[in-house]
Every structure is written in C-alpha cells, then in structure tokens.
Length: 252
Ligand code: SAH
Image 1 (tube, helix red, strand yellow):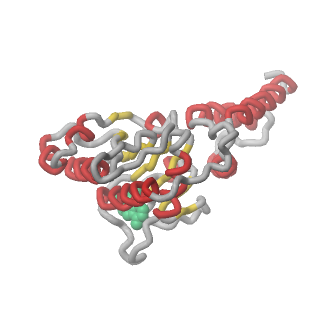
Image 2 (cartoon, rainbow, N blue to C red; image 1 turned 90 degrees about the vertical axis):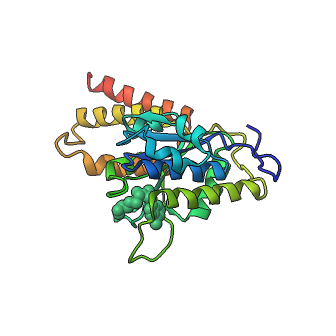
Image 3 (cartoon, helix red, strand yellow; image 1 turned 135 degrees about the vertical axis):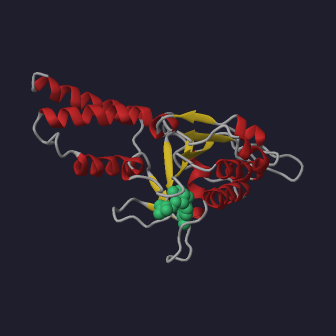
C-alpha cells in the first residue's frame, strides 16, 4: 500500500488503521472520538456493544465528523472487531501487573505507522468506568500507556483517542518508516491466531498438559509468547501441522 501523506491542501486517510471502542457508555464520547479521529485522518471506527448508538446526543458533538460516526462498524465482541488485524494495541490507563509489552504513544505510533503499510492495525480503548478486561488484553499484542499524573492517570476516553491519533498522524508525516521485513510475509491476522489457540488448547488438554478447569494462566502466558513472536501464516501452518501430528499420535 502506498504510504499516505497528509499535506496542507489534501488529507489522505490512514485506511489500514482502526480505532476500536469497547462498550462505550456515553454517546458524547463516541462522537468526540470520531471528531478526534477525523482531525487526524483516521476514518475507521469500530464500536463493540455500545450502550447507546446511534444516538441524537452524539450528532452535535461530532461537529462535522458525522461521516465517521455514521460509518462506524458495530460488533458484539472485541474478537470480531479485530479478526482481520495483524496487530492490536490496547490503550490502558493503568500500568498492568502482568508484564504485557508496553509502549508510550510515540513508540506505538512509529510501530503502527510501519505495520499499517502492509497490515490492518487496531488500537483498542476500554470502557469509561472500568477500562479493558484481562481477557480483552489477551487480544492485544502491546499495551499503550499515555504517561501522565500517575495519581490521576485515567484520561477521558475521547481525549485518550486524541493523543494516540495525533501521534499516529505525526508518525505518518515523519520520514518513511523503513520496513526491514519487506521481503517477509506480514504477521498472521487475529482470526487465524484464534483458530490456532483453540487447536493448541484442545491438544494440550488431550495430552493432559492443561487442566481444562484451570486453563487461564497457562493460556495467557502462551498468548503473550505468540503475540511477541508475531508469527507469519507459514509459521502458523507449521504449528498447526505439529498439533495435528500430536493429535494423531494420541488417537484424537
Ligand atoms: N477507569 C478505567 C479508565 C477508563 S478511561 C481504568 O482504570 O482502566 C477509558 C479508556 O481510555 C481506557 O480504557 C483506555 O483505553 C483509555 N485511557 C485513559 N487514560 C489512558 C492513559 N493514561 N493511557 C492510555 N489509555 C488511556
């Protein structure tokens, strides 16, 4: 894909990048996020089970970004919102206890800018009151935390979208990111990874390595391992082949 460049006269939208809001409760926040996105040339808004959408209160707040608001894709799970994405960044107001790889907005934007040349990339934002659950963070390769007053670290949802959108816009304006992996396949998308995880979990249960009553910690560690590795389709095919061979030996 040609690298989009926003100039003074002409803004090219950054079409491989999507903003995902998980269960936003206030229509005003959805609208303000849409406006923040359009200012920064982002156009793809995904809403996971929004409490109120569409809603009249949103229209005035969108102030010219109604097109982004009206075109928002509504899904009933985070997994379906990011199924075709190769890379998913989760925005978190808190520094998490589990060691997810973590970026600040500028580092994340550089990475997003590079990856979005060849793949779909999502930035996921949590609920106004409770943020993202650990299960939702399992869908994320990286966390992004906006450094701020750590005694008061929770930005308004749309303000957090604005900060990330600005950094992505700025990164796109900078020198073209060099993609050292140009010759390689891009990382596999989340739908393929979900299928792989499902198969892996089944096989691990079959060989009595995983207790189905307490799968959480082991699977979470494995998600993080594979998220770090960012496997390509060919590599996932090899892993699936190995699992199938193990299944055969176990007679499954
Ligand atoms: N009370 C929630 C915060 C919700 S704010 C909590 O403690 O998690 C709504 C969303 O805005 C968050 O889920 C996150 O996606 C984003 N956000 C708010 N402040 C942020 C920060 N400092 N860094 C990154 N994202 C932030």
